[in-house]
Length: 623
View 1 (cartoon, rainbow, N blue to C red):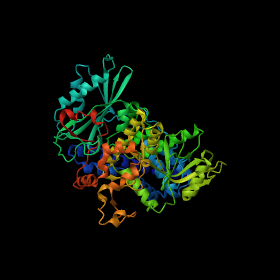
View 2 (view 1 turned 90 degrees about the horizontal axis):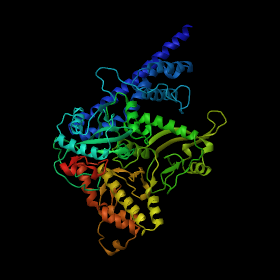
View 3 (view 1 turned 60 degrees about the vertical axis):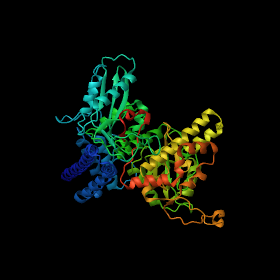
View 4 (view 1 turned 135 degrees about the vertical axis):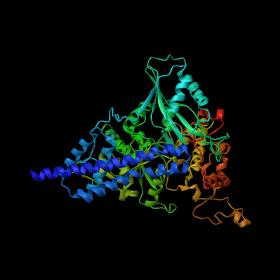
């Protein structure tokens, strides 16, 4: 019995070292998130963006630390499987009364698969399903804040209650006029409630942590009245003393203005759709200090039931947990569906092979092994571009992607044409085998990106063309698409991103009508590009030449040359030239480039301009 006792001791010590590794990770994650408040109060916008970028790397660093420690202290990779069974049981015991058990289980999976070099999620040594419930977890420490606070106003006390609600967040900057802003919010809430009688349970619930992203802080909560719940968010911004329309698109504010050092409530957002746009997969992750993240997710899910829990965890910066839940949702969907994976509709990409499952709202993107000569790139460079987008501010215009390795799919769910396509263009990424030895063949994709499915913009426009451009519905669809396309590019410019390949097929339209970019293999920082006008021909021979007669550097961009590729359709051209002709002018790009190089952080609002109170109080620095 002595060896067994010894094995049990080792198993416990491994489990304890692993939970210590997770606790260190979450402490660092939470500390960095909490510091967002100070950065917001001091207008440290570059610091905020840097922290958002660096925090993404925390998880992998802590997994490596924990794995190294376990190998060094316990030779964990050499331990027999019996010990690893005991490790998991001890670990479950350590999660009783833990405040982040679901995150700790995922951390255990990451460390274990790294040490045991397991390729797949389904085995006996990881948490395929949650072992510890996250229901009703509360922090009982005397100084701990509850997950949310509840307020009980009447119509008469609504204004004073809102003033108190905001003050309870203890922001260390004065508001320009909080009573005025609370008046705006009160009027908006009363209008939203209409003539409805306030029931006995009428209350306002707000999450205790502020949600920070870029230059904004958000109060997030819901109004409860009888059986009705109305989600809302209040953006709190630094006031800018001068109003102005955006230099490029309705979603941007005037730039280059100094903050006044005072705060304003910029808008009142109501309803699930507004919140879904605020928490969109095309935006940077929030920083919010959460003691019990599952409680935040549960609260947010009650406000946005159409948003998968995986995407809510992503929005909160807990991307690894988002990946875990996404994969569980995916396996669940596979078990309850029968359709087949197919080549995704639309124009095929030169760099990416894209496939989908019609019944599942995501697409799967595999980097091809071979590219045409005009694509001077490598697999590693492409992966670097996708990492850049992951770490960058996506300003609602670049789709977030989940990156997976060694993903197994049932072979019988794959269309033969799709298998042939992968074998032709990405053979290094494909394996077909009976890996588990149970007679069921699997398709194993070595590396894949997964992102939300959207309607490709070229297909959306083609639908309008097929209706006939004279039809009012078609005209409206074309105008909506083209205006949004230009706004998307201008928002990307504000985020220091040049999309590179600006063809319509590389953009998609979301269910909320937003145009989002999703082809990243040619993106560059605006500040790395050289925007030029096409030189004036010096003689008739140059003017008549069918070839480019002037020198072109590797980062040179000639905006006026976009026109032939984008504006072949007269209806599209008319709308584009009315709203976005400046995109064809090198001076537009040079002006924005100069501002970014001077250190300006542009303002991009995750809500429509007409929702802003700014017209009443004169402008604010955006989220």
